[in-house]
Length: 498
View 1: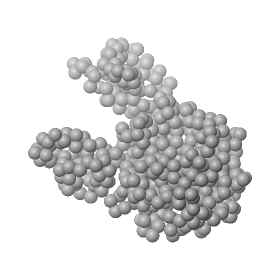
View 2: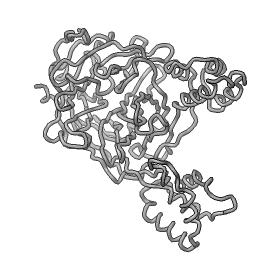
View 3: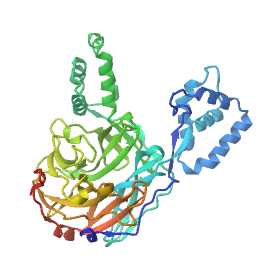
View 4: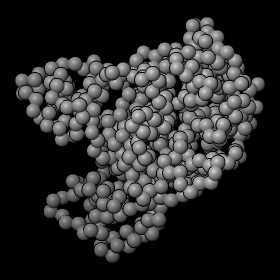
Protein backbone atom coordinates (compact mmCIF):
# COMPACT_ATOMS: atom_id res chain seq x y z
CA UNK A 1 0.00 0.00 0.00
CA UNK A 2 2.71 2.47 0.97
CA UNK A 3 5.50 0.98 -1.14
CA UNK A 4 4.80 3.53 -3.89
CA UNK A 5 6.17 6.28 -1.64
CA UNK A 6 9.75 5.13 -2.24
CA UNK A 7 11.34 5.64 -5.65
CA UNK A 8 14.03 3.16 -6.64
CA UNK A 9 17.01 4.50 -8.57
CA UNK A 10 18.62 2.72 -11.48
CA UNK A 11 22.13 3.12 -10.06
CA UNK A 12 23.37 0.05 -8.20
CA UNK A 13 26.63 -1.22 -6.70
CA UNK A 14 27.32 -4.81 -7.72
CA UNK A 15 29.81 -7.29 -6.23
CA UNK A 16 33.15 -7.05 -8.01
CA UNK A 17 35.29 -10.23 -7.91
CA UNK A 18 38.33 -8.16 -8.91
CA UNK A 19 38.38 -6.53 -5.46
CA UNK A 20 40.98 -8.71 -3.77
CA UNK A 21 43.29 -8.57 -0.78
CA UNK A 22 46.38 -10.65 -0.02
CA UNK A 23 46.09 -12.93 3.00
CA UNK A 24 48.45 -15.32 4.74
CA UNK A 25 48.21 -18.89 3.42
CA UNK A 26 49.49 -21.80 5.54
CA UNK A 27 48.95 -25.10 3.64
CA UNK A 28 47.70 -27.85 5.92
CA UNK A 29 46.16 -25.58 8.56
CA UNK A 30 42.75 -25.75 6.90
CA UNK A 31 42.61 -29.55 7.26
CA UNK A 32 40.49 -31.37 9.81
CA UNK A 33 43.66 -32.56 11.56
CA UNK A 34 45.95 -29.55 11.66
CA UNK A 35 49.52 -30.27 10.67
CA UNK A 36 51.33 -27.48 8.89
CA UNK A 37 53.38 -28.28 5.81
CA UNK A 38 55.34 -25.04 6.10
CA UNK A 39 58.79 -26.51 6.73
CA UNK A 40 58.67 -28.80 3.69
CA UNK A 41 57.50 -26.00 1.40
CA UNK A 42 60.24 -23.66 2.55
CA UNK A 43 62.84 -26.39 2.02
CA UNK A 44 61.64 -26.99 -1.54
CA UNK A 45 61.72 -23.27 -2.36
CA UNK A 46 65.20 -22.92 -0.84
CA UNK A 47 66.54 -25.69 -3.11
CA UNK A 48 65.68 -23.75 -6.28
CA UNK A 49 68.70 -22.24 -8.03
CA UNK A 50 69.16 -18.48 -8.20
CA UNK A 51 68.00 -18.23 -11.82
CA UNK A 52 64.75 -20.09 -11.19
CA UNK A 53 64.12 -18.15 -7.97
CA UNK A 54 64.54 -14.82 -9.73
CA UNK A 55 62.36 -15.86 -12.67
CA UNK A 56 59.54 -17.08 -10.41
CA UNK A 57 59.60 -13.90 -8.33
CA UNK A 58 59.56 -11.64 -11.41
CA UNK A 59 56.68 -13.62 -12.87
CA UNK A 60 54.73 -13.30 -9.60
CA UNK A 61 55.17 -9.54 -9.49
CA UNK A 62 54.21 -9.27 -13.17
CA UNK A 63 50.99 -11.20 -12.52
CA UNK A 64 49.94 -9.62 -9.23
CA UNK A 65 51.90 -6.43 -8.60
CA UNK A 66 49.38 -4.06 -10.20
CA UNK A 67 46.51 -5.56 -8.19
CA UNK A 68 47.95 -4.77 -4.76
CA UNK A 69 49.57 -1.97 -2.82
CA UNK A 70 53.09 -2.79 -1.55
CA UNK A 71 53.09 -6.47 -2.52
CA UNK A 72 56.82 -6.52 -1.75
CA UNK A 73 56.12 -5.51 1.86
CA UNK A 74 53.36 -8.11 2.16
CA UNK A 75 55.70 -10.89 1.01
CA UNK A 76 58.31 -9.71 3.51
CA UNK A 77 55.71 -9.79 6.29
CA UNK A 78 54.49 -13.28 5.41
CA UNK A 79 58.07 -14.53 5.27
CA UNK A 80 58.65 -13.16 8.78
CA UNK A 81 55.59 -15.09 10.00
CA UNK A 82 57.06 -18.46 8.90
CA UNK A 83 60.81 -17.83 9.19
CA UNK A 84 60.95 -19.82 12.45
CA UNK A 85 60.53 -22.94 10.29
CA UNK A 86 63.90 -22.30 8.62
CA UNK A 87 66.93 -24.11 9.99
CA UNK A 88 69.23 -21.70 11.84
CA UNK A 89 72.17 -22.88 9.77
CA UNK A 90 70.48 -21.83 6.52
CA UNK A 91 70.83 -18.23 5.29
CA UNK A 92 68.34 -17.45 2.52
CA UNK A 93 68.99 -14.71 -0.03
CA UNK A 94 66.69 -11.66 -0.11
CA UNK A 95 65.13 -12.94 -3.34
CA UNK A 96 64.45 -16.36 -1.84
CA UNK A 97 62.88 -14.78 1.25
CA UNK A 98 60.47 -12.81 -0.93
CA UNK A 99 59.61 -15.94 -2.92
CA UNK A 100 58.94 -17.85 0.32
CA UNK A 101 56.58 -15.04 1.29
CA UNK A 102 54.80 -15.38 -2.06
CA UNK A 103 54.26 -19.11 -1.54
CA UNK A 104 52.63 -18.34 1.81
CA UNK A 105 50.22 -15.78 0.32
CA UNK A 106 46.94 -15.95 -1.54
CA UNK A 107 44.36 -13.59 -2.97
CA UNK A 108 40.95 -13.36 -1.34
CA UNK A 109 38.05 -11.78 -3.22
CA UNK A 110 36.29 -9.87 -0.45
CA UNK A 111 32.90 -9.62 -2.18
CA UNK A 112 32.94 -12.59 -4.54
CA UNK A 113 29.89 -14.14 -2.84
CA UNK A 114 27.72 -11.16 -1.93
CA UNK A 115 27.50 -7.42 -1.30
CA UNK A 116 24.76 -6.09 0.95
CA UNK A 117 23.48 -4.24 4.04
CA UNK A 118 24.77 -0.70 3.43
CA UNK A 119 24.64 2.36 5.65
CA UNK A 120 25.18 5.97 4.58
CA UNK A 121 26.76 8.96 6.37
CA UNK A 122 28.08 12.37 5.38
CA UNK A 123 31.61 12.00 3.96
CA UNK A 124 34.43 13.79 5.84
CA UNK A 125 35.49 15.46 2.55
CA UNK A 126 32.94 17.92 1.17
CA UNK A 127 35.29 19.75 -1.20
CA UNK A 128 34.69 20.36 -4.90
CA UNK A 129 30.89 20.07 -4.88
CA UNK A 130 28.25 22.14 -6.63
CA UNK A 131 25.25 23.75 -4.98
CA UNK A 132 22.72 21.20 -3.77
CA UNK A 133 25.24 18.37 -3.61
CA UNK A 134 26.59 16.37 -0.67
CA UNK A 135 29.25 13.68 -0.67
CA UNK A 136 28.43 10.54 1.32
CA UNK A 137 30.32 7.51 2.57
CA UNK A 138 28.54 4.19 2.11
CA UNK A 139 29.58 1.26 4.29
CA UNK A 140 29.13 -2.20 2.79
CA UNK A 141 28.99 -5.73 4.10
CA UNK A 142 31.15 -7.65 1.66
CA UNK A 143 31.11 -11.44 1.72
CA UNK A 144 33.66 -13.77 0.17
CA UNK A 145 34.60 -17.44 0.17
CA UNK A 146 33.41 -19.28 3.26
CA UNK A 147 30.76 -16.64 3.95
CA UNK A 148 33.43 -14.48 5.58
CA UNK A 149 32.25 -10.87 6.01
CA UNK A 150 34.34 -7.73 6.17
CA UNK A 151 33.50 -4.02 6.06
CA UNK A 152 34.15 -2.04 2.90
CA UNK A 153 33.19 1.37 1.60
CA UNK A 154 31.99 3.30 -1.43
CA UNK A 155 31.72 7.04 -2.06
CA UNK A 156 28.78 8.75 -3.72
CA UNK A 157 27.47 12.26 -4.41
CA UNK A 158 23.80 13.06 -3.84
CA UNK A 159 21.97 15.92 -5.54
CA UNK A 160 20.99 18.28 -6.75
CA UNK A 161 17.51 16.82 -6.49
CA UNK A 162 17.45 13.05 -6.83
CA UNK A 163 20.66 12.85 -8.80
CA UNK A 164 23.06 10.11 -7.62
CA UNK A 165 26.64 9.45 -8.71
CA UNK A 166 28.59 6.53 -7.22
CA UNK A 167 32.35 7.00 -7.52
CA UNK A 168 34.54 4.43 -9.24
CA UNK A 169 35.71 1.70 -6.86
CA UNK A 170 38.79 0.53 -8.76
CA UNK A 171 42.31 0.37 -7.41
CA UNK A 172 44.17 -1.90 -5.00
CA UNK A 173 42.50 -2.63 -1.66
CA UNK A 174 44.26 -2.17 1.66
CA UNK A 175 43.57 -4.07 4.88
CA UNK A 176 43.89 -1.88 7.94
CA UNK A 177 47.00 -2.22 10.08
CA UNK A 178 46.46 -2.98 13.74
CA UNK A 179 48.04 -0.33 15.97
CA UNK A 180 48.23 0.45 19.67
CA UNK A 181 45.21 1.83 21.46
CA UNK A 182 44.57 3.46 24.79
CA UNK A 183 42.40 0.92 26.59
CA UNK A 184 39.61 1.87 28.97
CA UNK A 185 39.50 0.39 32.44
CA UNK A 186 35.70 0.69 32.65
CA UNK A 187 35.25 -1.40 29.51
CA UNK A 188 37.57 -4.08 30.86
CA UNK A 189 35.61 -4.08 34.13
CA UNK A 190 32.30 -4.30 32.27
CA UNK A 191 33.54 -7.25 30.21
CA UNK A 192 34.71 -9.14 33.28
CA UNK A 193 31.44 -8.43 35.09
CA UNK A 194 29.38 -9.62 32.13
CA UNK A 195 31.14 -12.97 32.16
CA UNK A 196 30.94 -13.17 35.96
CA UNK A 197 34.71 -13.20 36.32
CA UNK A 198 35.25 -11.62 39.74
CA UNK A 199 38.08 -12.91 41.91
CA UNK A 200 41.12 -11.55 43.69
CA UNK A 201 43.24 -11.56 40.52
CA UNK A 202 40.78 -9.48 38.48
CA UNK A 203 40.10 -7.17 41.42
CA UNK A 204 43.83 -6.61 41.91
CA UNK A 205 44.37 -5.86 38.21
CA UNK A 206 41.46 -3.42 38.01
CA UNK A 207 42.66 -1.66 41.15
CA UNK A 208 46.16 -1.20 39.69
CA UNK A 209 45.13 0.04 36.23
CA UNK A 210 44.55 3.75 35.50
CA UNK A 211 41.37 4.90 33.72
CA UNK A 212 43.23 4.79 30.37
CA UNK A 213 46.21 2.54 29.77
CA UNK A 214 48.36 1.05 27.00
CA UNK A 215 49.55 -2.51 26.39
CA UNK A 216 52.83 -1.95 28.22
CA UNK A 217 51.00 -0.80 31.35
CA UNK A 218 48.63 -3.78 31.17
CA UNK A 219 51.52 -6.24 30.83
CA UNK A 220 53.37 -4.57 33.70
CA UNK A 221 50.34 -4.83 35.99
CA UNK A 222 49.95 -8.53 35.16
CA UNK A 223 53.67 -9.07 35.75
CA UNK A 224 53.47 -7.46 39.17
CA UNK A 225 50.67 -9.67 40.46
CA UNK A 226 51.56 -11.37 43.77
CA UNK A 227 52.69 -15.00 43.33
CA UNK A 228 50.27 -16.07 46.05
CA UNK A 229 47.36 -15.04 43.79
CA UNK A 230 48.79 -16.58 40.63
CA UNK A 231 49.46 -19.91 42.32
CA UNK A 232 45.78 -20.44 43.05
CA UNK A 233 43.94 -22.98 40.85
CA UNK A 234 42.06 -20.21 39.04
CA UNK A 235 45.16 -18.08 38.43
CA UNK A 236 46.20 -19.23 34.91
CA UNK A 237 42.65 -19.27 33.54
CA UNK A 238 41.96 -15.81 35.00
CA UNK A 239 45.09 -14.39 33.37
CA UNK A 240 43.99 -15.83 30.02
CA UNK A 241 40.53 -14.37 30.53
CA UNK A 242 41.99 -10.94 31.31
CA UNK A 243 44.18 -11.00 28.20
CA UNK A 244 41.32 -12.11 25.95
CA UNK A 245 38.92 -9.50 27.32
CA UNK A 246 41.51 -6.74 27.02
CA UNK A 247 42.40 -7.74 23.43
CA UNK A 248 38.79 -7.22 22.33
CA UNK A 249 39.59 -3.49 22.15
CA UNK A 250 41.98 -2.48 19.37
CA UNK A 251 42.62 0.10 16.67
CA UNK A 252 43.08 -0.12 12.91
CA UNK A 253 44.60 2.51 10.66
CA UNK A 254 45.10 2.98 6.92
CA UNK A 255 47.85 4.77 4.98
CA UNK A 256 47.10 8.43 4.29
CA UNK A 257 47.23 7.91 0.52
CA UNK A 258 44.41 5.35 0.34
CA UNK A 259 40.96 6.34 -0.88
CA UNK A 260 37.95 5.41 1.23
CA UNK A 261 36.75 2.77 -1.24
CA UNK A 262 40.14 1.03 -1.02
CA UNK A 263 39.94 0.49 2.75
CA UNK A 264 38.89 -2.87 4.17
CA UNK A 265 38.14 -3.47 7.83
CA UNK A 266 39.14 -7.10 8.14
CA UNK A 267 38.55 -9.44 11.14
CA UNK A 268 41.38 -8.92 13.63
CA UNK A 269 40.38 -10.86 16.76
CA UNK A 270 39.21 -14.43 17.44
CA UNK A 271 35.70 -13.15 18.29
CA UNK A 272 35.28 -11.84 14.72
CA UNK A 273 37.30 -14.50 12.92
CA UNK A 274 34.28 -15.56 10.83
CA UNK A 275 33.08 -12.10 10.04
CA UNK A 276 32.32 -8.45 10.79
CA UNK A 277 28.65 -8.13 9.86
CA UNK A 278 26.11 -5.36 9.21
CA UNK A 279 27.92 -2.17 10.21
CA UNK A 280 25.47 0.62 11.12
CA UNK A 281 27.34 3.92 10.77
CA UNK A 282 26.14 7.23 12.18
CA UNK A 283 27.72 10.69 12.43
CA UNK A 284 27.50 11.42 16.15
CA UNK A 285 27.70 15.02 17.34
CA UNK A 286 28.19 16.47 20.81
CA UNK A 287 30.02 19.40 22.39
CA UNK A 288 33.39 17.96 21.36
CA UNK A 289 32.43 17.87 17.68
CA UNK A 290 31.40 15.21 15.16
CA UNK A 291 32.72 11.67 15.21
CA UNK A 292 31.80 8.66 13.12
CA UNK A 293 30.45 5.79 15.18
CA UNK A 294 29.15 2.41 14.17
CA UNK A 295 28.03 -0.88 15.57
CA UNK A 296 28.59 -4.26 13.95
CA UNK A 297 28.25 -7.94 14.78
CA UNK A 298 31.41 -9.95 15.42
CA UNK A 299 31.03 -13.64 14.56
CA UNK A 300 33.46 -16.44 15.41
CA UNK A 301 31.59 -19.23 13.65
CA UNK A 302 29.49 -20.13 16.70
CA UNK A 303 28.77 -17.01 18.72
CA UNK A 304 27.86 -13.41 17.93
CA UNK A 305 29.07 -10.37 19.87
CA UNK A 306 28.19 -6.70 19.34
CA UNK A 307 31.07 -4.31 18.72
CA UNK A 308 31.30 -0.55 18.33
CA UNK A 309 33.83 1.51 16.44
CA UNK A 310 34.70 5.20 16.39
CA UNK A 311 36.62 7.35 13.93
CA UNK A 312 37.12 11.04 13.33
CA UNK A 313 38.20 10.64 9.72
CA UNK A 314 37.26 7.11 8.53
CA UNK A 315 40.98 6.35 8.34
CA UNK A 316 41.74 5.37 11.94
CA UNK A 317 39.16 3.22 13.70
CA UNK A 318 39.00 2.29 17.38
CA UNK A 319 37.02 -0.88 18.10
CA UNK A 320 35.54 -1.78 21.49
CA UNK A 321 33.10 -4.44 22.72
CA UNK A 322 29.56 -3.52 23.78
CA UNK A 323 28.41 -4.81 27.14
CA UNK A 324 25.17 -5.19 29.05
CA UNK A 325 21.68 -6.67 28.55
CA UNK A 326 20.82 -4.12 25.84
CA UNK A 327 23.65 -5.44 23.65
CA UNK A 328 22.93 -9.15 23.70
CA UNK A 329 21.97 -9.62 20.08
CA UNK A 330 22.41 -8.28 16.59
CA UNK A 331 21.10 -4.96 15.35
CA UNK A 332 22.26 -2.31 17.82
CA UNK A 333 21.99 1.19 16.29
CA UNK A 334 23.27 4.33 18.02
CA UNK A 335 21.41 7.64 18.19
CA UNK A 336 23.26 10.53 16.44
CA UNK A 337 23.36 12.63 19.63
CA UNK A 338 22.55 12.37 23.30
CA UNK A 339 18.93 12.86 24.37
CA UNK A 340 18.52 14.62 27.70
CA UNK A 341 22.13 13.75 28.46
CA UNK A 342 21.63 10.05 27.73
CA UNK A 343 23.49 7.92 25.20
CA UNK A 344 20.75 5.85 23.56
CA UNK A 345 20.58 3.02 21.06
CA UNK A 346 18.00 0.89 19.34
CA UNK A 347 18.42 -2.83 19.87
CA UNK A 348 16.77 -6.23 19.52
CA UNK A 349 17.95 -7.97 22.66
CA UNK A 350 15.26 -10.68 22.57
CA UNK A 351 15.80 -11.43 18.88
CA UNK A 352 12.40 -10.24 17.66
CA UNK A 353 11.42 -6.88 19.24
CA UNK A 354 12.74 -3.36 18.63
CA UNK A 355 13.84 -1.89 21.95
CA UNK A 356 15.47 1.25 23.33
CA UNK A 357 18.52 0.93 25.59
CA UNK A 358 20.56 3.48 27.53
CA UNK A 359 24.27 3.46 28.39
CA UNK A 360 24.84 3.54 32.14
CA UNK A 361 27.75 5.05 34.09
CA UNK A 362 29.58 1.70 33.98
CA UNK A 363 29.42 1.61 30.15
CA UNK A 364 26.84 -1.15 30.10
CA UNK A 365 23.77 -0.98 27.88
CA UNK A 366 20.78 -1.33 30.18
CA UNK A 367 17.75 -3.59 29.90
CA UNK A 368 15.82 -2.27 26.89
CA UNK A 369 12.38 -0.68 26.85
CA UNK A 370 10.25 -2.39 24.16
CA UNK A 371 9.16 -0.09 21.33
CA UNK A 372 7.68 -2.28 18.63
CA UNK A 373 6.84 -5.98 18.46
CA UNK A 374 5.77 -8.08 15.46
CA UNK A 375 2.18 -7.09 14.69
CA UNK A 376 1.47 -6.86 10.96
CA UNK A 377 1.45 -9.77 8.52
CA UNK A 378 4.68 -8.71 6.78
CA UNK A 379 6.66 -8.72 10.08
CA UNK A 380 5.23 -11.54 12.20
CA UNK A 381 8.50 -13.50 12.47
CA UNK A 382 10.60 -10.64 13.83
CA UNK A 383 11.22 -6.92 13.60
CA UNK A 384 14.39 -4.83 13.91
CA UNK A 385 15.86 -1.51 12.93
CA UNK A 386 17.39 -0.52 9.61
CA UNK A 387 19.98 1.78 11.08
CA UNK A 388 20.28 4.69 13.46
CA UNK A 389 17.31 6.99 14.11
CA UNK A 390 17.17 10.07 11.89
CA UNK A 391 16.23 13.34 13.56
CA UNK A 392 13.37 15.29 11.97
CA UNK A 393 11.18 18.14 13.23
CA UNK A 394 8.36 15.63 13.74
CA UNK A 395 10.41 13.14 15.75
CA UNK A 396 13.03 10.42 15.46
CA UNK A 397 12.46 8.58 12.18
CA UNK A 398 13.28 4.89 12.61
CA UNK A 399 13.47 2.67 9.56
CA UNK A 400 12.53 -0.88 10.47
CA UNK A 401 12.73 -4.30 8.90
CA UNK A 402 10.23 -7.10 9.27
CA UNK A 403 10.29 -10.74 8.29
CA UNK A 404 7.18 -12.39 6.88
CA UNK A 405 6.18 -15.58 5.05
CA UNK A 406 8.97 -17.42 3.22
CA UNK A 407 11.48 -15.34 5.23
CA UNK A 408 10.70 -12.28 3.11
CA UNK A 409 12.35 -9.11 4.44
CA UNK A 410 10.71 -5.72 3.92
CA UNK A 411 11.32 -2.20 5.26
CA UNK A 412 8.87 -0.09 7.27
CA UNK A 413 9.06 2.99 9.51
CA UNK A 414 8.28 4.30 13.00
CA UNK A 415 8.35 7.77 14.52
CA UNK A 416 9.60 8.30 18.09
CA UNK A 417 9.06 11.32 20.30
CA UNK A 418 12.03 13.68 20.07
CA UNK A 419 12.33 14.28 23.81
CA UNK A 420 11.02 10.92 25.00
CA UNK A 421 12.17 8.31 22.46
CA UNK A 422 10.61 5.61 24.66
CA UNK A 423 7.30 6.74 23.15
CA UNK A 424 6.29 5.64 19.65
CA UNK A 425 4.09 8.39 18.22
CA UNK A 426 3.38 7.02 14.74
CA UNK A 427 4.06 4.14 12.38
CA UNK A 428 3.77 3.48 8.69
CA UNK A 429 0.73 1.26 7.98
CA UNK A 430 2.47 -1.19 5.67
CA UNK A 431 5.85 -1.35 4.01
CA UNK A 432 8.01 1.41 2.62
CA UNK A 433 10.14 -0.91 0.50
CA UNK A 434 9.64 -4.61 -0.24
CA UNK A 435 11.31 -7.07 -2.64
CA UNK A 436 9.91 -6.73 -6.15
CA UNK A 437 10.65 -8.87 -9.20
CA UNK A 438 14.11 -7.35 -9.64
CA UNK A 439 15.02 -7.62 -5.95
CA UNK A 440 13.94 -11.12 -5.01
CA UNK A 441 16.72 -13.24 -6.58
CA UNK A 442 20.24 -13.45 -5.19
CA UNK A 443 22.61 -14.98 -2.66
CA UNK A 444 19.87 -14.60 -0.01
CA UNK A 445 16.54 -14.39 -1.91
CA UNK A 446 13.53 -12.22 -1.06
CA UNK A 447 15.34 -9.63 1.04
CA UNK A 448 15.62 -5.85 1.05
CA UNK A 449 17.63 -4.62 4.00
CA UNK A 450 19.40 -1.44 5.05
CA UNK A 451 21.76 -0.48 7.85
CA UNK A 452 21.02 3.24 7.68
CA UNK A 453 20.15 6.20 5.46
CA UNK A 454 20.18 9.98 5.76
CA UNK A 455 18.18 13.06 4.86
CA UNK A 456 19.42 15.55 2.27
CA UNK A 457 17.36 18.49 0.97
CA UNK A 458 14.12 17.07 2.35
CA UNK A 459 14.64 13.62 0.80
CA UNK A 460 15.31 10.43 2.71
CA UNK A 461 18.08 8.57 0.90
CA UNK A 462 17.91 4.86 1.63
CA UNK A 463 20.67 2.51 0.45
CA UNK A 464 19.57 -1.10 0.63
CA UNK A 465 20.82 -4.58 -0.08
CA UNK A 466 18.77 -6.44 -2.66
CA UNK A 467 18.86 -10.17 -1.80
CA UNK A 468 22.58 -9.76 -1.07
CA UNK A 469 23.13 -9.62 -4.82
CA UNK A 470 23.78 -5.87 -5.07
CA UNK A 471 23.18 -2.56 -3.33
CA UNK A 472 20.43 -0.28 -4.58
CA UNK A 473 19.22 3.19 -3.64
CA UNK A 474 15.76 4.60 -3.02
CA UNK A 475 14.42 8.01 -2.06
CA UNK A 476 11.24 9.28 -0.45
CA UNK A 477 10.27 12.84 0.59
CA UNK A 478 10.45 13.01 4.36
CA UNK A 479 7.28 15.08 4.61
CA UNK A 480 5.34 12.57 2.50
CA UNK A 481 6.61 9.66 4.57
CA UNK A 482 5.62 11.26 7.86
CA UNK A 483 2.23 12.30 6.46
CA UNK A 484 1.56 8.68 5.52
CA UNK A 485 2.10 7.52 9.08
CA UNK A 486 -0.75 6.86 11.49
CA UNK A 487 -0.89 7.42 15.21
CA UNK A 488 0.57 4.46 17.04
CA UNK A 489 -1.45 2.27 19.36
CA UNK A 490 -0.15 -0.30 21.84
CA UNK A 491 0.62 -3.76 20.53
CA UNK A 492 -1.23 -6.68 22.12
CA UNK A 493 1.70 -7.33 24.47
CA UNK A 494 1.93 -3.69 25.51
CA UNK A 495 5.02 -2.68 23.50
CA UNK A 496 5.28 0.48 21.45
CA UNK A 497 2.31 2.37 22.80
CA UNK A 498 1.60 5.89 21.72
